[in-house]
Image (cartoon, rainbow, N blue to C red; front, top):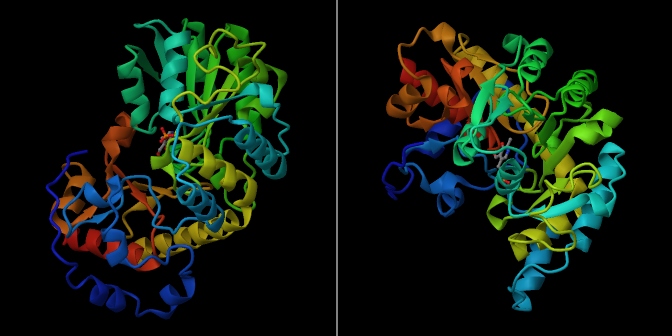
Length: 413
Ligand SMILES: Cc1ncc(COP(=O)(O)O)c(C=O)c1O
């Protein structure tokens, strides 16, 4: 992503454009102000990556942050720490681990043993450290594009080679190509980096597919690193099944990574969790001693413990807001730019937009940015199947979403 110089001119005409765009009754009915009720002027004052990467006249919808206010239990936990000047290193992680185990049991019927959980800085650091343990430089790692661009970056950082087995049937949300995975494992690949739910399509892989993946991995002595950071954001009525819960083979082959950071919008606080059966993965887990939260942020641990223990009600409202935004975005695209086809996300806040019917010569996101002043993530950064696609982060107010589609349409005129 290129960083444009930050231009801090006041917002011009955006409010008027929102109001004009909100004139249809259908649009008004489809919208839910909560949880995305932070005024744009307030968002523009944020110092996080989403709000400082682009010029002030750009509507920024790539970076995976949400335009929400923090959940009250998180505010209380952080406020109590601030009031007590409790800003030292992170301490005993057992409260966080118990909170996560409670969440996993309530939401996914997953009984997580505290001895299977380690705390790390973030999912990126957790995956990279494990990769360093399980795969010497030069080794091949299976990924399934279109996929979260930093998967490529993590492999680059660890000197590993990507073996790409693209998702199949992308026009229907994309499912695992089990034949392709079997062939890659048969050729000697020993590490699979799985994204579940999948970023950017928002697909929640089925239990049957994941069980088959686990069988294949077990048969070939491979390890599955399951990045489940978007798991808590599965929509109501969609069953997210954590990889490790699916079978004995999954338990034996899997190391799962999760975090409160995407779900409760606290990625800057730095805290993630790694779950694995220690009896199978002792060597891999060495950099993460039990009972110590090496390198995690103290505020990240406090906030994550509060989120997992007391954040369900806020999360349920958030998910309802995200589902409402999916309908709104779909309607806006259908009525304004019907050539764009949108995947059907079942989790999280990322819309995968197929722009191929627009017949554009270059990267759609570049055109939307240059001519429409709306920033999306370029499809190509997700690997070759991302060509002629773009990813839009819809964890924003209905006003911003409507304005974003209007700007995309304007860019195409
Ligand atoms: C699939 C996936 N994994 C990991 C991350 C980053 O997680 P962290 O900030 O904990 O490194 C993201 C962020 O968007 C993501 O989408």
